Amino acid sequence: MRKLSLEEFVQQAMPFLDRDLPSLVKRPLNINYVRQVMPLIQERAKTLAAVPQLANFFFLDEPQYSIELLLSHNLDATTAIQAIVVTLQKLKTIESWSAQSLEDTLRPLIVELNLSTGEFFGLLRVAITGRTAAPPLFQTMAILGKEKSLKRLSIAQQRLSP
Image: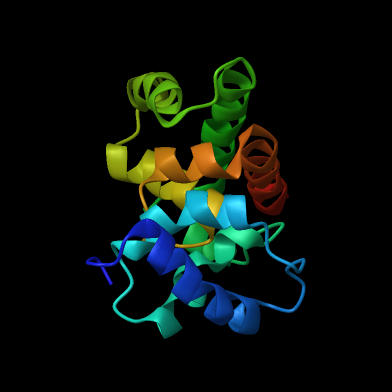
């Protein structure tokens, strides 16, 4: 998979994405968006058949996950909600939505919130992707875009709220 050019990988992956992404994903797929997503998937995919499962959260309106998964780094709901609220406030101020600007904005919050890197980024990763293991968080959020990323964090906050 890694030996293919990006364009070859995209062309070979498209039939699998078309066939195996959840039915609620809008078709036809936006090829330009697929080209943005595939570099993060290509390095992880062992087979083309694995691509839709690895990439599905990029195409869904919101990822599916349990509250337990959201709190999987020994966080309590109150701490997680606080972290998401502060994160949302900071992210709303970003004008240039890029992996670098996201990292520059989010890394200092670890100290501010008194959380470990794993706790903080683990929480955000699940809120954004629905998974504990996914492509790099900042790149993922950059591809998803500001609106979708903020929406997913807001949904996580709502799910955690009593």
